[in-house]
Image (cartoon, rainbow, N blue to C red; front, side):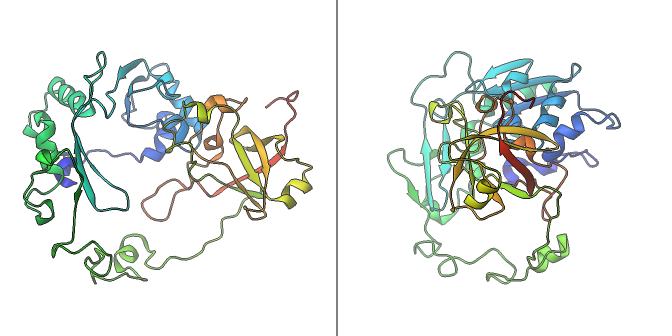
Amino acid sequence: SAALQRPDLTPAGTRTLNIVDVGRDLLNPQLDPPIQALFIYNHNPVCTHPDQNRMRQGLSRDDLFVAGCDVVMTDSMAYCDVVLPAASHFEYDDIYAAYGQSYLQRAEPVIPTVGESLPNTEIFRRLAARFGFTDPIFQASDQALMDAAVDPTDPRLQGFSPSMLPLDKALLMNAPDEQPVLMCNTVKPATRSGKIELFSADLEQRFGYGLPRYEAVEDSLPLMLISPSSRKRTNATFGSDQASAGIEEVEIHPADAAARRISDNQQVRVWNRRGAVILQARITDAVRQGVLYSPKGTWLTTSSTGQTVNALIDADRKTDIMAGACYNDTFVDIEVYNNNASD
């Protein structure tokens, strides 16, 4: 990854910002220098970031220039001053690794680029030229980037360079001794000991969490909202598909529903101090009492409040390791939706 990310090109002292904090940083008058421009690509922050309303407020700044690039008109693209057409994966060369498998595959375009659409690599080559970045990496071809992404000398590539992998099959990346990849058998964990570590000295040194532990999270509201994946979407991708149209469901335990006189398939309002979202109740004991489940990645039109569950998530609460967003430490309440009342 270092060959592609090139941290060596970042000048010493360069400011870095946590992407989770972008909404807050956009509205921070003390941030010096302020954020004056954003480029949104491979991302739909309005539908995936915590504290959705703060993110939308930040993107609405009159003095902020926002450029975006996508294959569809997402909720985030609607905040852009300029929207560039992105090329789909049908339109450019790339190599693909598989989740949970050991295959590597190369693909070539199957259709010409549509209109003025461009792949990310070409967009950044052109931006680099305009900004005057002269390191050779900024003009490297897609084929050169493929060969930098995966070590061509790795014996698992069976003599192929990544940019010349055969197109008619996926390459099985076996272990160095040509045995199938089996964790703790033919390959070992990338830990100092080469074993699965119940206690990690590295995590203890970096974060003080060498051993995972439970720490209670307190809140004044009674229900915890979790928002795992949906079978309809990958994060917010495919949120414009017909399968994701209409009101999203929230699963609630029968005891919690009875205490609030909520019926199955009834529209409900899930709320906290950050926002409110209208969902359709599904009563089930698949969730434990005190917990609500509603899948992530829905788009704004699915709720009559123009908000999704991401509006309810606290962006200022961070994970213990790597300061990520605590999507599942979200406390809410739920009630029958009265569409005559103000949201």
